[in-house]
Length: 134
Image (cartoon, rainbow, N blue to C red):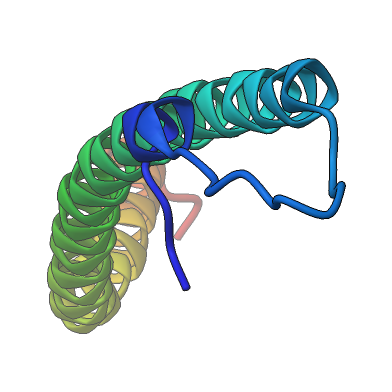
């Protein structure tokens, strides 16, 4: 049976003609029981309020965590996309580097050939200027 504190306080007992419990003792007992009920009711009320507050706080934190997790996932995906893009650009640069290196090699060979040509022309000119002994 569940009693309310007020019900226990208002409870009365019939008097026994042949004796029975003393009215004062019964009233003291009932007052103590009612006080305990009030104390427990108040504790339960505070605990329920605290539970509700904690549930609300937990819900907010879980919601915030979900938002944070989503944000991190989005940032991670964006970084992965940028990495893939940079890898593709690196491959393109590598493909462009090979012809550039070959061009630079050919340019050096061309410059070397021009130097050799100038040397050959100077040698030829110097040989033409020398008198022939015939």
